[in-house]
Image (cartoon, rainbow, N blue to C red; front, side, top):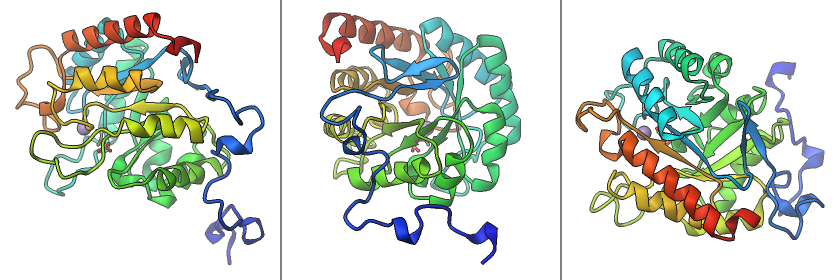
Length: 301
Ligand code: PEP
Ligand code: MN
């Protein structure tokens, strides 16, 4: 077998039955065993996993220069810490907008240049990881890609933090196994993101059921920071403010939220307009989160 086709790690002699994930397990590391400490991850100079919740905000998809720059400026003014936006979009239908690709990455680079906000953007295909890594401060792995093991190994080698979203049908163990694929490549800068699971309510009053119970369970099981995505987790901008606060109150270290410009009609975006909030709402969420953290005991955790 050639070098290129050899699966890296773990090698057969390292395999352990009954230990589906090890590196990302709290139990494995003396400094995290039996406590609630989180291993902090630095994304473009922003500390994730500390006492201060971090907010990533921006459009679902990069649809154009003016659209992205306007939203980036508004998110920054509202107090967001990082900019999100997909250049490569994982769409359920092949006929839906698939993203601007490389042109979208260039727009994100321009948005960072102007606002200084670190960029979180998705890689969909192992062949695109190097190109995404040239612009991203953190590579997002979307829910649909959570078990794309070739992609997980590739981002594990990219030398950048990874935001790993949970598939809507993944158990906690399957999710942490996906994180382990990144970790075995030598990258522990992983941030987990709960983005809603599939339940019988889908399509009635929401798109997903935000599984807030998993946050505390994860924090007991791993030292990796945990985020909540109230946008995909609800599918409805009216539920996003409450879900954001509930996520932080449940122990999440941060939020990733979809935003549209103040004057944009909800029908205008090619992707996820119905669940995107406006900048004024984002500002209020950030203020409420900060005030909740100040007055709760969470900051001491
Ligand atoms: C997104 O963040 O725009 C996205 C596609 O999310 P998910 O992978 O959670 O569906
Ligand atoms: Mn989206």
